[in-house]
Structure formats: structure tokens, C-alpha cells
Length: 176
Image 1 (cartoon, rainbow, N blue to C red):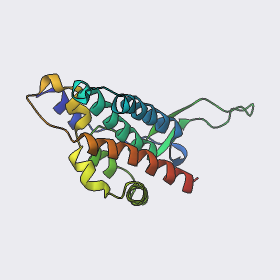
Image 2: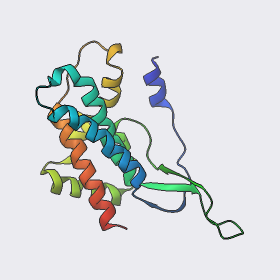
Image 3: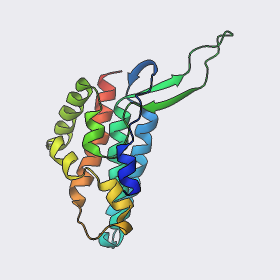
Image 4: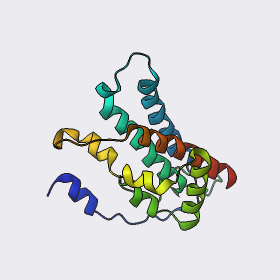
């Protein structure tokens, strides 16, 4: 059994958050950075995209994954000390893993519905087919040296990443 298969079988317990679960700006900002890194390659004049296919896929796919994880974030810890100071808190997501449809499915149904709606408004495309098509792009491209062949929908993963950035931002803005 490969390391990837072992990781997929691992089940993580759902963290118990302090306070409410809301979109997480810290995770979203990380997603945006991976998107911008991929866009630097995509939009640079004279660059052969085939020469950078794996970095493009990894960055766009990680952006998409982090967007989904940013949709439901919370904190562990925090609260106030006896002196009235705010304790340190660890911010994290309710979702785990790399498989995009599985990460999406782990979100609460109202969050899923809002993200699907905002994604359609932002891109004009239905979210589920793109999630399915790009499901394992992050791991496939990151571990391409362990695979024989394969193909990627560069435009699809780019649309997915940008659409999820916009959708999660809209969701967070409308649900403070």
C-alpha cells in the first residue's frame, strides 16, 4: 500500500472549536497566494506552460483545496484569561484531506449550498463537475514522479481555483 493510500484511509476527528464556525481569512489568504503564484506563470509572456505544468496544477489545486477549507474555520483555545486578556488561539478548518469532492462533502449543507451558488454566479459553471474532474490534482501533480502518464485540465483547475476564491469571499462577506 502506497503512502498516499495510507493517508487517504486515515480518519481525523472533527475538532471542537471555541465559538462559531465562520469562513477563515487566514486560510483564504494562503489560498490566494497559491493562486497568485500560479497566475505569475500563466500570464507571463513567452512562458511555455508545458514546462511548468506540475507547479501550475499543484498551486491551483492547493488554492482550490484551501478555499474549501477556508469556508468553515474556527479556533481552538482563545477566550479570556482571568486578567481579561485574550488567550492565544489556533485557527483551523473543519475540513481535512486533499480530495476536493470529499473536502467539499465534509462542509455543512448550508455552506455547500452557498458555495455552489456563489461559484455559479462567479464563473457561470456548476461546481460539482469541476470538483470531480480535478479531485486528486494536488496529489497527482505533487507526486507525478510516482505516476505513469496522466493528463490535466489546466483551464478547468484554473477556473475552479479562481471561482472558489471568489465564492468563499462572497460567502464570508454575506455571512459575517
